Amino acid sequence: MVSGLEAEERPGKPYTGLWIRSYLMRVGRDYVYNIWRNLVKQLEEYGYKYPSYQSFRKYMRVLRKLNLIRQVRVEERGYGFPRVYYELVPENVDRIDLWINPQKALYGEKVALGKRRYRRLKAEGKI
Image 1: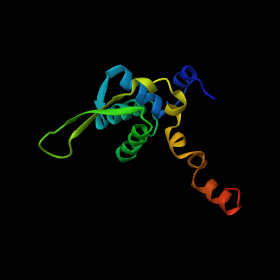
Image 2: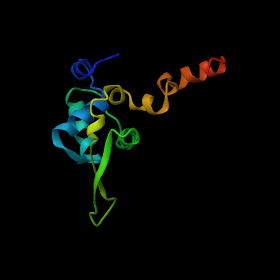
Image 3: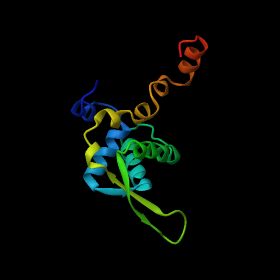
């Protein structure tokens, strides 16, 4: 298992969950679009692919379901969707295992297999 310090200092593309955690620790609270925009800026700077905004929103929903982040404010703007601000849940900031792979933590081992491997193992009767 990867410890928190090793995970945050590993070379290459950062874990999205740990990046969100460190970003929210730095700024306190922010809304989803702004968090995504900052992530995209950093990933583009290093030449990495970045998630679509819709994909990132789903990722944030997983973090919310795991109680890693919480909604703190809704800002009505008079147009479009309201801005929903999130902050870290202090009790779960140190749960590095959840931050590294939140989908696996929420949905179990099957999600970590990938679609092809999951279908093959299911056809073989191993799942």
